[in-house]
Amino acid sequence: MKKIYKLSEPYIDNKEIRNVVKVLKSGWLTSGPLTLKLEAQIRKKIKTKNVIAVNSATSGIFICLVAMGAKKGDEVITPSNTYISTINTIYNLGLKISLCDIELSTGNVNEAEFSKKITKKTKFFIPIHNGGNPLNLNKLVQIAKKNKIKIIDDAATAFGSKINNKYVGSFNDTVTVFSLHANKLVTSGEGGFITTNNNKLAKKIRILINSGLDKDTWNRKNTKNYRILNVGLPGYKFNFNDILSSIAIIQIKKIDKIIKYRKKLKDRYLKKLNSLITNRIIEIPSVSKTDISALYNFLILFKKINVRDKVAKFLQKKKIYSTIHYTPAHKHSFYKKKLNGSNLINTNYFFKNSLSLPFHNNLTLRDIDFITFQIKKFFNEKK
Ligand SMILES: Cc1ncc(COP(=O)(O)O)c(C=O)c1O
Image (tube, rainbow, N blue to C red; front, top):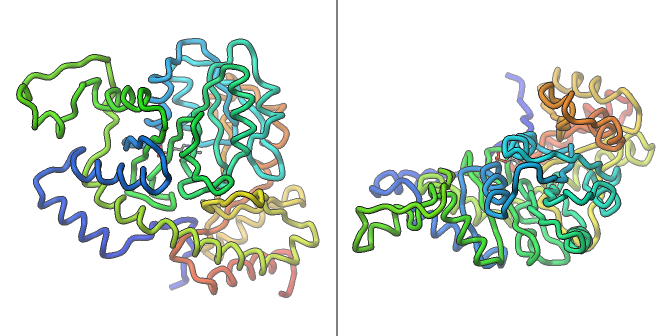
């Protein structure tokens, strides 16, 4: 049977499996000791004061907007080139979606694109670190602060990314949201976590994700009046659970190893695709020299117009699967008439001409050689 080159694949071994069996036998399955252990582990890893585990990054972004006081009609600036669940969240909360463009060289929002969109009604900014490649966060924070705009840093794909040697998620003026979804570097199938150095905000988020109860089940069981519940805020049911925490705890321990191996895969891709890069047939988004990318994906940008879909089809015949990061918000049928994206030149360029190739920790260097050989074959290149 022909080998399948999947776009992404979880990196799981017996340690995760053993930990799941252990928790299933423990008698405690929902948020409890393992979720607390996971939060402490992440706090220590990225050096942030608070970590709150949630059932997805999408819920995390939702709850941050609620906790930070988003009101109907508030304007939220976000790139159209993002995962659609973020856009749905903004829409469902009755907030106004203001789409901004990205820069071509990185695929990220820059200062100019952000500034262009600011109005008196702008209250929030939700940028993403495209493919784990860090944003120019310090500059964006300066602009946001000057305009009294709160930043919810969507780092769904950027666990392990660093800006000037500081982990994304450890900065003072943002609240950051990460994903543990199945296609992320570290995963528990579904899940996410929020990080913030703001203790007051963390406390509020913790209550809001636990139905608004001032004590969750695990903490309540050790108190005198544990039978009586009390809701102080009308919260949501977005808490994480110990089954998934048992997987995430093992996964998080592997993050440095995972990124190190991905760097090897990326370098191999670059080496083998070098002729296409130097001949300006493709381009690779750049990462600032002072930053480290978690390397969520390996995305190529075709400089030759209208070739992307042909390459994708050609690769699929060889069982090499690829995708587009992302289908922009304004291209989805529900949002087509609601959001105008015709002026988002670079976003539309990415949508038409970018392709994310197989990229995960079960790929070998020989796999990359095969994939790149096929791409070069498409362009009639011999090596
Ligand atoms: C940029 C971005 N934001 C948010 C999400 C949503 O994450 P989750 O699936 O954990 O809700 C994703 C998932 O791929 C993403 O890529």
